[in-house]
Amino acid sequence: MFIKTYSSAVFGISATLIQVEVNMDIGINFHLVGLPDNAVRESHQRIKAAFKNNKLHFPGKEITINLSPADMRKEGSVFDLPIAIGILAVTNQIKTDLLSSFLLLGELSLDGCIQKTKGILAVALQAKANGFKGIIVPIENAAEASIVPDLKVFGVKTIIEVIKLLNGDQSIKETTPLSVLEFEQLLQPYSIDFSDVKGQFIAKRAFEIAAAGAHNIIVVGPPGAGKSMLAKRLPTILPPMTLDEALETTKIHSVTNKKSDHGILTQRPFRKPHHTISDVGLIGGGSIPHPGEISLAHNGVLFLDELPEYKRQVLEVLRQPLEDRVVSISRSRYSLEFPTNFMLVGAMNPCPCGFLNHPEKACSCDFKTIERYRQRVSGPLLDRIDMHIEVSPVKYMELTETNSSESSQSIRNRILEARKIQQDRFSKVQAIYANAQMNRKQVEEFCKLEPAGQAILQKAMKKLGLSARAYERILKVARTIADLDTSLDIKTHHISEAIQYRKLDRNI
Ligand SMILES: [Zn+2]
Image 1: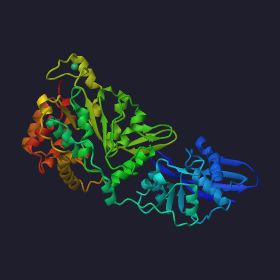
Image 2 (image 1 turned 120 degrees about the vertical axis):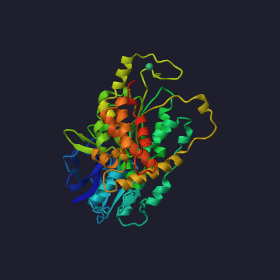
Image 3 (image 1 turned 60 degrees about the horizontal axis):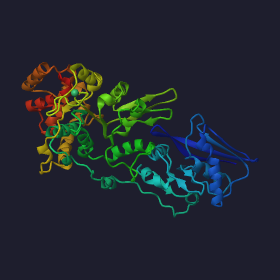
Image 4 (image 1 turned 90 degrees about the horizontal axis):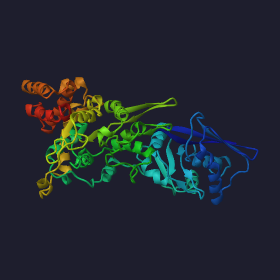
């Protein structure tokens, strides 16, 4: 007697269909074939115990289980459920009519309960793509799976519930999918706000521009100037996540098991990897490929504090994903892509001791050390960062000011207006939605300057020793400033302001 059930294996952030073939013959052995790892091998024991504790019959026959495709390594214990159901089917303990319509996934505990797992969103998307009517998953994962439209999702607590469901018992209810409206109701206000930041008007203005045009930004300033306080608040002024963005980002977080209780992320991620991170940790990869920090920051913010302290090679590998908004990882056994559409915020001290240009403290570094320190952030990486600003320690007067600063919501409203203008501008250019994403040709088309503006920019390039690479960056930022000003043209004061945000291009 032979039966097939269906399951799924997550690889990277995508899932692959796994067929679980169960064959019963005369004999008494149990064989598991098709590249299973140890956790899969142990499923025999778990299933046996779960059957016994639920008064199900485990056959004293020769059982062979084949997980196909056989050339793909199967990890973890999620195949317990499809194997167990296969055994129940092959021994006529359940009806088989629905087995080909549902994908099954979940680890069995010895008492027959079904444990939650990771990567469910990827599995649900794959189930739909493969034409399954629905999936049967651990109850804790049901909300996440139900995000996928037009797929029936049943969350189950025990193997007995799965049996009931497959036998046509109506008491197990389908988990209803999340609508756009319900998703929007899940959006929670942030617990931090830009109004917490006292003073720092120039920096706050720069962050508003960065958020409006999705520009990467580096903040230079002494310790205690509030660099990370500003960076952390960037997500609070970015547009709220859309359901599509939330799905994309949840899919990445779900395979690493980092997600919200609702099953779907409702806030833009803010990732702050330590400077000792490896390039695999940052970019992703490994023998079983995992998304790195830059993909966990997808649709959100990646904050690299103490930028010059990161290993040079780690910063170098950032260049391609910053440009392409996707990272390709190739190893001998696989090649795959993770999305990496994040805003980069870098922070650094002005010099190794931190006090260069400090109003009260003296800097103890010599010119050469400062230069070496700054060169650790390589030119090619700086090429991809539109804005560099300087922040100073907040003066005592500003710290004690009682007037509250502007709230994130109020700043965000201006950003939403500016994003709308950009959306209209790029409506015919499919892959981009913000000024920072323009290529050279688009900069030429959308960032035309009046002769007066042109003259200012030329003069600044010469006088401040700005590099040629700075030119395009300044034009993009000027475009965003004009958009925030709801001005069709880039005026001279827009370009003058944009020139201010190129701190690191200038001489020390
Ligand atoms: Zn110094």
